[in-house]
Length: 115
Image 1: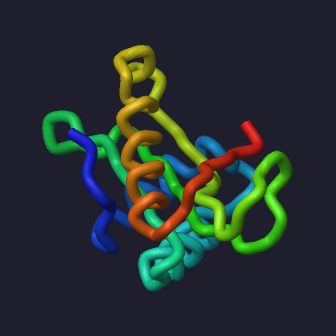
Image 2 (image 1 turned 120 degrees about the vertical axis):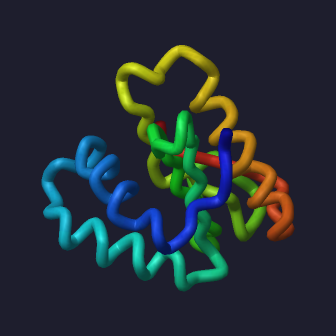
């Protein structure tokens, strides 16, 4: 099941984010995601399997120039991580679809990433 993350998910998402961005500390990740949950221009979605968060996708609206796009703002995938044992089951696709849908609901006609 994919759902919008809640502030109570901050610790688990931060632990997953450290696997994606290991040059940060857990405290830095928790601080970052706490601020994300307070913004209307960002969204985090999680994949939950048997009550466990196994993946996340973090997206936001970017108003600055985004290479390859023609509009502003643009929905932008900042990061996505799926635990190894849950990969290759469509989890990333489901998370990205939620990010794209969120960006459309914010008026975006384009969605981008540097991946």
